[in-house]
Image 1 (tube, rainbow, N blue to C red):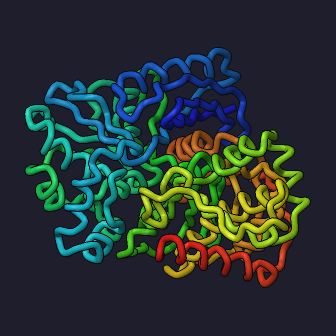
Image 2 (image 1 turned 180 degrees about the vertical axis):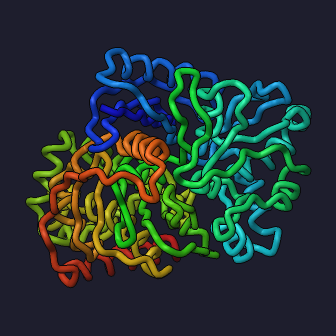
Amino acid sequence: MALTIGIDSSTQSTKALVVEAETGQVLAQGRAAHPDATEVDPRVWLAACRDALAQATAELPGPVSALAVGGQQHGLVTVDAEGAPVRPALLWNDLRSAPEAAELAAGLGGPGEWARRTGSVPGPSFTVTKLAWLARHEPALADRVARVLLPHDWLTSRLAEPGQLPATDRGDASGTGYFAPATGEWLPEILTAAFGRVPELPRILGPAESAGQTPEGWLLGAGTGDNMAAALGLGAGPGDVVVSLGTSGTVFAVAEHPAADASGAVAGFCDATGRYLPLVCTLNAARVLTATAQLLGVDLAELDRLALAATLGAGGLVLLPYLDGERTPDLPNASGTLTGLRRANMTPENLARAAVEGMLCGLADGLAALRAHGVEVRRVLLVGGAARSAAVRAVAPGLFAAPVEAPEPAEYVALGAARQAAWAAAGTAEPPVWQLRSEPCPAANPDDYAEVRAAYSTARGQVHDY
C-alpha cells in the first residue's frame, strides 16, 4: 500500500493526513495548534508541522512515497543570507500595510494595469504590500532580507534535505502581487517598486514537479496555497465553483483562462493543476450565523429550525451582514445593518432567515462577479462549517441559481496536498482520481429568489451607495 502525506498549515493550526495514494482514503491524521496572532515566527509552524506529522505517522501501514504542503496564502516570510528568519512572518490577516496597498494600487498604471499584469489589484493581504511596509517601517531589517518566501515555500524547504533550493508553485505565487499568472513569471520590476530591490525568490515548479526529498527519502511535492489545495482535494474542475463558508467566505472556480478584474473584487489566481482559480473573498460568513444565534439565545440547530420556519424573504427583513467590516464589497469600516423592520415581521424566525439569506446574498454577489468574468457554473460545491446548516442548504441553490452539492466534511486542504504528492510520485499527466462523496441540496427555482436578491441589492445601495 503506497501512502502520501498532505499538510495543511493554516492560520490556526497544522493538520497532517496520511492517505492511501490510489484511492484517497484517509488512514491517519494529526493536528497541532498555532498562536492566535497576525505575525508568527515561522519556526513555530515547523514545530507544529513536526508534531502533527509525528501523530499521523506513529503507526504507518505501509511506506510513504511523497509529501506536500498546502499553506495559508499571502504570508510574508523573510530570511537572511544564512536562511534564518529576519523577523516574524506577517500573515494574510495582518492589515498594517493598508496605506502601502493603496499607494501601490494607485501607482504602476493604476488598478487596471495591476489586474492585467498580476491578475489582481493588491490589497493589504498581499505579500507585495507587506514588503512595502517592511521597507518603509523597518528598513534595518529590510536590509538583512536575502530571500522572500511564502509560508508553504518555507515549510517545504525546511522539511527538505539540506542543500535543496526553495521552490513554490504557480498557485501560491499568484497571490504575491509580483507574479504574472498569464506567463508564469516573477515580475522583478514590481518588487523593485515596492521593496527597492529584488531579493532571491523561490523557483517556480509545475503542478506535478518535485521540490526535492525529505531526509526520510519521501518525495516532496511542489506544494501550493490553501485555496488551490482545497480545489485539488475536492477534485474541482472547469464548471465547478467552490463556496467555502468558514469564518470568512470564499467563492472560487477552476477556469481555463486567467481573470483580470480592475475593480479588485475578483483575484485572478492560478490553481494547482496548470489552470486558473479566480476567487472572491468576503470577511463575513459562518460567524454571521453564530452571532445571530447568540443574539437570539439559541444554538445553531435551533437557528436552523427558526430560519426554515420563516417564509422566503424573511417577511421583508434584509440583513447586510458586514459585522466585521467587509472586503467584498470594499467596505472595511462598515457595520451590519438590518432593514425593513416592522412590528409584523419582528420575529425570531424572520431574523434567523434574514441572517441566512444575507450571508448567502453576499456570496451570491461573488458568484455573479465570477460569472461576469466568463466562469462557467455547472455546479456549486458548498464546504466549510456553515455548509452543514439545513437552512443554508435549502436557500443556497435558489440564491446561487445553480445545482448545489455539499461534500462530506473533510480536511480538503490537507487532502489536496496529499493528492498533489501522489501526483508527483506517480509522474502522470493528470492527478489521481479520488472519489468525492457529496450530498445534493434540495433544488430551488432561482426566480423565486429574485426578490430576495433585489431587496439585498437595494439595501446595500441605500446604506452604502455601492
